[in-house]
Image (cartoon, rainbow, N blue to C red):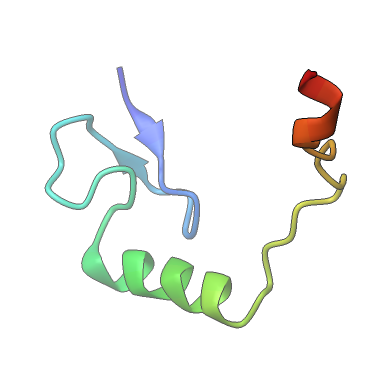
Length: 55
């Protein structure tokens, strides 16, 4: 089974050293995308219940 690199869409075998990326370059690009906040969670998470609700 092969997967596609999330950055450049090249096929990547599961045992690749930079899996799920095809190369270190794509891994660094992805890290930069996270650091520059290009990736965002579109739906806010559910609030955690307070300790008062547990009583």
